[in-house]
Image 1 (cartoon, rainbow, N blue to C red):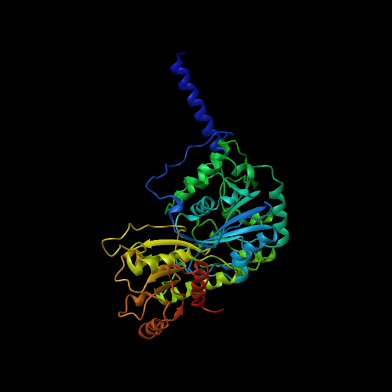
Image 2 (cartoon, one colour):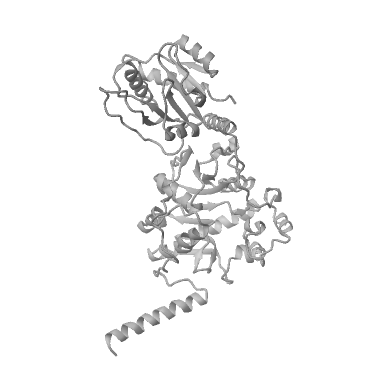
Length: 494
């Protein structure tokens, strides 16, 4: 037999062996990575290109512990589903720090204050790319997450846990498992994989270079099936190829999606959850949720937490209401404890003359605070201006935009920046202004001159707060504290 013939026969035997294992629902051999079902589209943007608001940044505990990245979707852009709060508190009762990632179609999500305070971190992210993109975005942004002993990736697609005892038993089994990556259930659809609604990873898993390569390559696919095929189905195969072990807590002799097709049997085996998709009508007709309420009640779950309706498109929010909700959400966030503001400053700071000097003093004062600052320069007024410079210290929407009251016009990008902020504040550092300026887009003003403050208040009908005069000899730290206090005084009271 020629060398070419022997090579051909060997390839055919390997291919037949893979088909035999796949037909019998067996996982690939350890170290063997199945090819992806389709190739990634390099034109699709990466996960980290979506906007994200850091409402409460993740701060690692003094002692490494367990951290869960919990992704939920806010349908109306204002609140989260009731069953999510129940799930989060069950995780916290097990000693797990929960970082909540809210995928939102609108920017005005508000949480119960006590829940927000208890979270290990809170992020509101553009609703794009589904769960994998949300997890990838925060994992890339918050590298201190990898100081944890254990990471959980969880989403809101399950109702439960049914009761504390059942969940405690489940968590004890998970923590006792030997595998590097543990899932609750497995599926053999399109190849063996762990279902991604609940994954637990030990430090050995997220210390792997291949693990980081996987998450760095996640993109914002708009089609859910693409996300399933490219990420959920291939994740364990890629990790096994890197030498990691993966296992399911509830083995699946059926081969299909047992959370849908065998949910009753799964619950009887100690699975304290119920798949939300069973009630939404987006599964095959053979999947029925008949009797679900009696089953869940018998296991101690509050069935009033179950939303039986289909996902609805979020209602359009009037601009004024949306802006007011943003201000209230910002005020609620600051009441949880001192936190830096995200400030976007629009202006011209390198121009000659008094306006340029005053602008530079304002920026210098703000940089003596703990706020995160983005600078968005306007073109200088003419000859003698130095090149403008831009600073970016945060992503996503600003909490407060500071803008000169005497600005003549803004381009669409800066106009959108003002519209997206919780508060747009005009700054005036001279005598009474002789023209109105773009006050229709401004919520309030800061003024150094009392007469100017009265004129702005009378002509613009907006609240005005005093700030110290800004000059080269100004105490910058004191000025920063005064400006911060003036901005906070413009937010709604509790």
